[in-house]
Image (cartoon, rainbow, N blue to C red):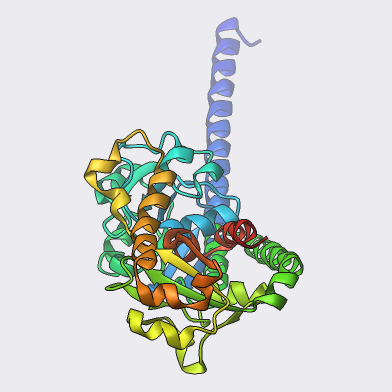
Length: 355
């Protein structure tokens, strides 16, 4: 017969063996799960080709740092939100954009996060980026070319140049969507844009029939800072899509600097849009004023150009001036966003100007 002591010893041994068996199974299951995750992550990696190089991205980026309004436009067009943002000029001195509607021109009302303030687009705060540890950095090359290596050490980085080239945004938004792991979102954003332009073309048809020729000028003081924005551009793509024609020769299809004395050679323009680019809204003295940043950006960017136009005899002699068909707006809006949202806002402003 088995004694009570022997029974207890047998039960202890059985329990010990069961514990070892369960531990081994658990370890084996963990190894399988880890290997499955590794395989899944490896399978979810893709290489994005962009203007600065090739970037491998794995998984779905959640924390995205954005450098410049063009990148912000494209990201928001894909229904993603920024975790950090650097603007063209520094209009807000806080560590966070805690009230984006009042702090980020034109796009702030579409932001639902409180992005980290990275400062100026040309010199984004590396310290803030290191602290944030984003999953993805998006932006224009510009000065970013010099720090691409540094940015890439912080997070996978996708950069591009020539944002205002014709159809460039279509290429870049597809690259961003690929980086996010969902290229169909880019196609949806492009299709929505094309439909919006087609519908607006019908709205503007009476205007483009009566006043087809347009001239786009980028200016500060027109006597020393004046350029023609050509048709081979983002704005050329948009305005021609709306049914307008550019008052330029084929040799003038790209943006070129001109003097005010050249304006009479472009007198066939029925309508002139002057894009002011005075950046003094970012001056230190303006940062903490009570005036909303959008109002400051609009007023400061256009006021110098408008004043110099009104005071210049050559500008005033143009038929468009005499017929009150010269309109002043901001370069930031028309040729700084360069994406689907920017196009939507330009179309809305054209309605205000022309209808």
